[in-house]
Length: 331
Image (cartoon, rainbow, N blue to C red; front, side, top):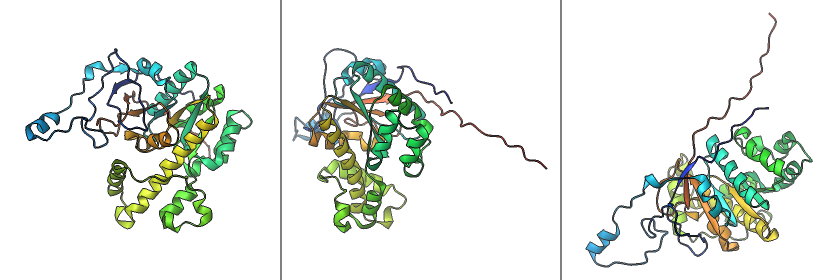
């Protein structure tokens, strides 16, 4: 068995301003050295509390924001704040091992403070929940879980990236919740759009699909325009697929928390589903008003106000090489 390195609580972080929205509540505390940028500074998703008509005042209001990098903290400094949240969203770049070790450390620390914890994962699809339940309760092996959830066909990233988290969940019997919708559904939406789905297929959709958030649409359009196949399909179709993913995962988080009011949850997902709160987090809060926090690794995000509550700077860690088997062939 390959032994995996676990990072100590040495990931540096800094705080950006919270996305100001009725559906995303954040705890603000006095004191300490955590820095918060002013609300309304940049980003169309933030309210401008003091509209200005005069041009010279507008220029003053738009002055460059400054982030004081001398006041960065260790991850341990914010665990107490995170423990007050019903949901902690932790983003990732899927193939960065250091991101997953950070996620594990956050899970460990939150679990120590509150054993009534669940882990929601983008990487598993909802129809395969029973295989996760069997694995966590030690009624099946890791191999049986991977085959049952069709990991190697449906997710395909190296499972060793996620193994430390899954092993810890099994050791502590922490429920792991499959958040993602079935690939068959998103494939079908991509092919024919929501309007083209059969009645049976429509029954698989999340009950709510809210496309009214202009900032979400703008962000998804930027992703679409950078996609190599952007010219071969409809943006609206692309948006419908993204909505199906984000609303589907949000619905699963909210339904689990409603059914288990004693539990908190750590949600692990790609940063694109979490940034600015308008992917999964606000859609959870629309269904279930809760206190939540969003943490994103600094890799591959722009440090704009409102992108997250906390930005992590995890140490780079390489995934250990997989074992190789040697075979001798006779001449």
